[in-house]
Length: 175
Length: 77
Image 1: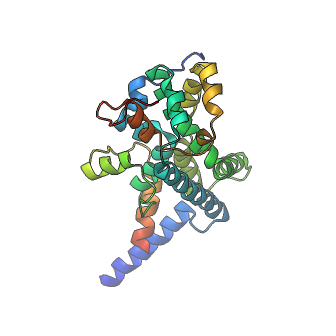
Image 2 (image 1 turned 90 degrees about the vertical axis):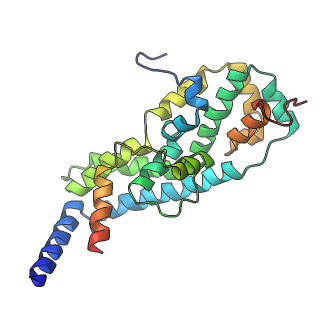
Image 3 (image 1 turned 90 degrees about the horizontal axis):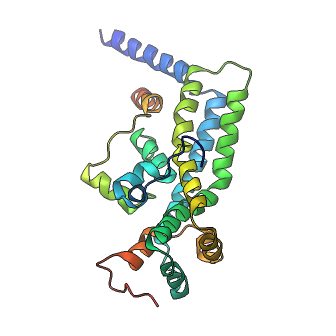
């Protein structure tokens, strides 16, 4: 009976391997691209999370705009800065997905499933929504604030927002 | 604006819970975490970490095949 269970388990394992095309070069390639994006994304998020407050000049520049616009800028710009930080790996993942989908060879079921799962996870509709929201912010404000180096790399938008607007913040009156 | 485009609300931009599903980076990492593919959660934002600690993160709807793949491989391995 134990042998039968072991054999069934092994058969199931082999079936799983076939279904999910674990050993196929396409699957391995896609997994490599996913892992590269995931690793870089974590690095970029960590950079943003660990970033210190920008200079008083930057805080004052933000404070000069209506709160809703400044908050909108901070949160959408932080996403775009993160996107820029991962752009190489995200681009390679996008190329991999498109190239695999465009392939004339029939995709193994596991590869097709992985493509279908990863695509909406890596490219959710909110990517475009955030970009559009950013573009809807006042142009003069965007141009002015984009001139600060701090907004060209991942930054801690929540920390800046708390510093500027939290009612419990210690230093609300930014010069 | 394009037809069908809905701008994020101010609440969506600043709401902590919404950020998890609204911001692509945290969404992707949460997807990978929930699929069992992401082990040390060292890159999570403090918001995600707190929600995870609180057990407040709902499961994502799109984790089927990857989760099955991981489960199968862990069971087989």
